[in-house]
Length: 355
Ligand code: PMP
Image (cartoon, rainbow, N blue to C red):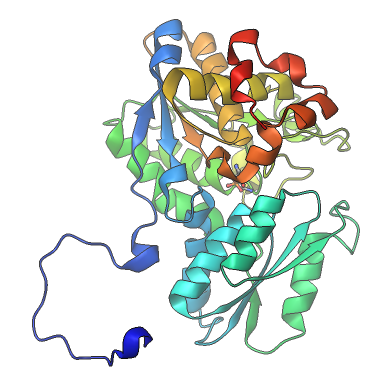
């Protein structure tokens, strides 16, 4: 115990309205109406403020979901180790959950991810292994390395966020019901990008079921991901080619978390990086929201869906995380130039690129 305190039995129960620690603070995020974009489209464009989760991203829900599931199934025992392959946010969520519940945390991540995320993971007590960013088919892929590492040590689990459906289930039991209640069931469209597919499939499946199919579920895809063409071609899986500056999203296969839900997706948009980056700046300027590129991509896609469905509709999306994790890139003039994205920022917004 810090400060030389010894544990004392509680002599009374407190009636304070407080949640229990980190895990109690996950979820129940507000819905934010995006005023300017709602006005421009005549729709109600709303973003679920997932950046307000205590670990700072939508992935806190999945992290808690997979750990709880492993505990309930007796796979994870006190003092155990949680191992995961992650682009960052799941790792950050897991590192928090592990500290809060007394587990060790080991993270394998592609070495293309931002330094902010690596530093944060280490500050949260996780052991981090940046590894070369190679395709899933390659045995050196960060996921396979995480799986093999977990197999090699006792009382360790690989949480397997891509194919462990406890991830999508976390959204089926929380994100979906929250959006349904917050909109009084009046949600015409839900759209978001996928990394593991947990958010889209879990939230989407709940909303489809509750609305008897009335809520349209759409996919927002970054360049280099195969899902846009898969959904729009009716199930043809192309080779992955090209890439995107958006971290944490894009996919080269149908994960277990997307699973059969992929057939229930009503449509898809592919969003070029220039539009996502412009929206990062636009959201900051017009709404005061400092959000990462996947949130911005989701908002661009929500506007496209609003235009498609017509005025008077409610379109919900996910504001996945804050820009804090990417600011050395997204707000750096040199980085934007190196990525050929300088022209993505309209003149009146260039003042925000201060690095
Ligand atoms: N945005 C960000 C910033 C992420 O890190 C992730 C997860 N990697 C996603 C969106 C996508 O979430 P999901 O894994 O549930 O598809």
